[in-house]
Image: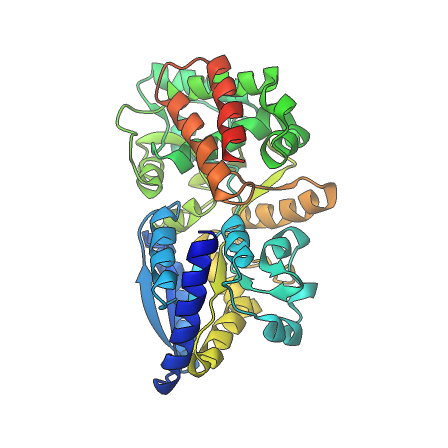
Length: 417
């Protein structure tokens, strides 16, 4: 998505913007990948809010939890001169589209409504480019959660693990009893979700920052990174044989049904918990991933706005206003499992897991341990992210040694730069 694509896309978008003026209507078309039960329910909150304002919602869902299929679809739409009104993007993807000059300008709306005052700096850094607001943050997700079936743990006399040694001990006890210790879906982004947790849990926030955010070669090639891959190999032994290709929500379902004891997954899993009629923090326990207490990995879903015809600007602005309204931020995130992207929304209606997340966010922001997730598009550009995905997944699904994995990681990162 560089120079040639940019020229084609700009010409097509501008042409579509002019020709579309004759077909005025209050509607928005939104491309997203929220297709699981809990996610679809969350989308419904936004859809209903807009319909109350007389804006019809044209849904363009593209299945796939990591958003890769949605990204492919979006590129095709923009290149053909038919961009959606808005598209769900993760942070680094917003940066990449912005660098191409292909995003619309929401600054007038943002200024009028005071977004600068209520959005955390780490989140705003992805939404604002050259002083212009080009995307709207919908939520703040925390990927470094460990979800635990409370009954399975109680029945087996187990306590939630607080570090990776304790995790291994618990998992071994479960495995010895024939219980699947960890529900997992063998997809690159899910493998790297665990990898993120292990890097942070074993190395701490400073090591995560150097290795993942700064790609410091000394950190990438360190003994600590070897230990990270050693732990990944142990985790591979705690998942069931049928994990390959499994969608994340199906893995979550295993924990909800008691078919597995734990899952390392972001708080979007909470949407599935609520939809199943279970109570987060009670039926399904939420604890920070082993060793990561005090740090907050984050990813935020943004709605990036694309240049549209003059007839659709009003509807696009209404979409942006609705997304950032405190009432929507509360209602949407209560359903989605995430927490609001605004710091001025009360947490009184949120469950124990949500309230802990909101409190931990403030603590981490003050301590400098609010860190973008590699697995979820807030650490590295897509090319480097995919290169790291490939090594993590190759190691997880083979007998590659930890030292060979570290060497491959360095080589892949350097080749992708």
